[in-house]
Amino acid sequence: MSQDGLFEPRAIAATLRTSSEEVGQSIGLSKDAVQRRARIVSAKTQRRLRELVEVLNKVQPRFGSDLIAYAWFRSEPLAGFDGRTAMQLVRDGKAHQVMDYIDAVDAGVYA
Image 1 (cartoon, rainbow, N blue to C red):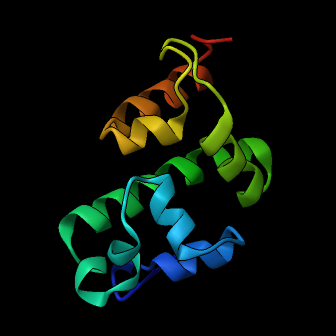
Image 2: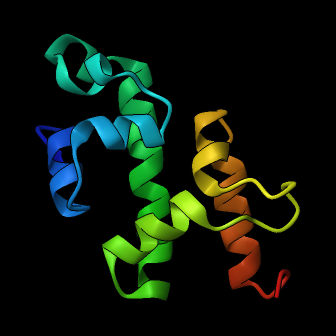
């Protein structure tokens, strides 16, 4: 999902069978941020794309599919986060809390 050391919105979107615009919206980025080269390479855009890929890579083995992992990311409320989804937390800059939550689930803290 990355090319030349950069996360590429179009490659991520192709893997998830969606548009780069929709991927951007999922992580709180504008259409320009995921379509204009100058914005794609920005630190914020790259950070958000990396966070998305890291979360999906962490949960994908549990679901066996990138598409199902992405559906979980977008729609499954996480326990202890007032019904917020991983998508909402990543948008709010709390990707590390999502990763900690996944680690806790894997360790058996959340059932």
